[in-house]
Amino acid sequence: MNSLDDVQEVALPERHYVGTAITSVFANHDPKRVEQHLKAFIARRFEIKHLADAGSYVCPSFVSDQLFTYLSCMEVHALPAVPEGMIGFTIPAQRYVKVRVEQGDPYELLHAYIKAKGLGNNKRGLSLEVYQVHKPLWPSEVDVYVPLL
Image (cartoon, rainbow, N blue to C red; front, side, top):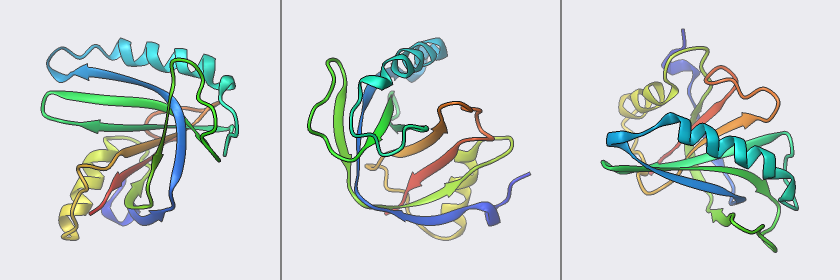
């Protein structure tokens, strides 16, 4: 079982991503849509040039009370050309809390840490899930990051 001691505070530099996005309504969310979106992205990831790490993909996300947007992306060194139907964007340097858990919800643990330490969640920032392409096991093989103020 993971504890607050497993959470790390990290600072990530500016990073560039290319990928695809899907937006869903919380009230009638169908998880199969996200699975289909991810499969389509994985099949197309070879179209993305200037990869920073071909062995991992990153899923940034942001939420509101009604909607959430989930992106499937590859980190790139530069954004010179974005394949048709994909988006390219830059996330500025940001502080995060980070954890990988064997079981349970990593977001619950990260938000408990933020509260316990008196930190603030940057709700305008993007949370990140970093998966290994050949071992994308949730949650035991995924690093989860939540942005801090």
